[in-house]
Amino acid sequence: MNFGKRGRLTVRVSVLAMALTGTLMLAGCTPPDSGGTEGGSANVEFDETARSEAQKNVDALTAVPSYNGPTEQIDMSLVKGKKLYLIAFDLSNDFNRRLADSFEEAAKLVGAEAVLLSSGIDSGVAASYIDQAVADGAAGIALLSIGVEQVPSAIQNAASAGIPIVTMAQTSAGSDPGEGIVNQVTVNTTDIGAAQVDLAYLSSGESLDVVAYGGYTLPQDVSQLAGQEARMAELGLEDAFVKNDVNLNTFQTALPGIVQSAITADPGVNWVLPTWDVLGTYVLPGIRSAQAEDRVQVSTWNGIPAAMELVQDGEQAGVFGVPLRWWGWATFDMLARYIAGQDVAPDAENLPVRLFTPEVLADIDDIGDEQSLYEDDHVFDTYRELWGL
Image (tube, rainbow, N blue to C red; front, side, top):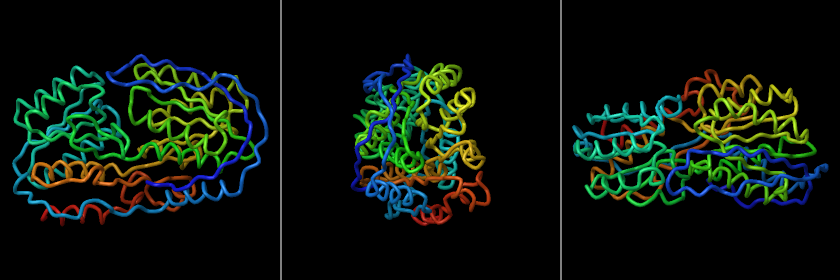
């Protein structure tokens, strides 16, 4: 998603750093530089040109998305009866489970078999599952939050066997998915990070002081944090931004206390930007413990029902959601095209992102229903037509 030319202003604001060191270092990942640890504070005089551009970007993201994916039909007789593996880094959370179940739903519609496996956040197990798919004669493999950063040798083995591999939720759209991977079905997390800053900028009043959290071992998180950082710099607010690594093994217990300490140490902090929804659920207790609910706001991305409820209840300023059923079907569609021998453009499925604020959710009847959130019934009708159903 292209947000266009950005505005700029110059300002000094308060800054804080609380470093959270991650220990789950996956092969090939280089952590970005963490933010500074010293700074001052000042009032912000917002530039109207920059404000107008940020408002335009945010307004565009609140709109109902439309289908903008492939339009060529697929001969599903070439896919029927084939075995497709979906191997996830973790299927214990709602986000990944919904993606996998939707992939399986699409496969069953055309008579293909979907094998869903979870590595339990273990790269060795993930590699063994890829090897299993090769030995089992899989026609295609979808990897969910797994890529060359974790299992390069296993991916190369599958690619050498002529099995097409696509990734989901691993890298940001527009980036190279990695050697041995034919394509990816994902969103542009760099742009999501920039949009998080736009929302914060419009809502921050006279000052903006941002602390961000994400996993440096997760390529999508690295891109999202980079998008936040770049947008802050474009607004002249680079000294008001600190990004922090999250230990994926311990964040459930460690992150609330770390966030509380960060907010308590710097009364100027008024926005915390976790990367994904589940991180947000552990950030919020830290904000509450610091008794800072009135001054610190949060936005996240994924769009799981729990995050929607937090926005609806006023505990979170916004969530950048992606329709998960649509995503699962889109991944099956892409993999089926490779199995059928079609040419597929990079990032061909072009998934949408929609921003949900309390105002947007006020007009939605059922926040637990993706059709209500994205009005996307037409998308599944489109896929059925392309699949000859």
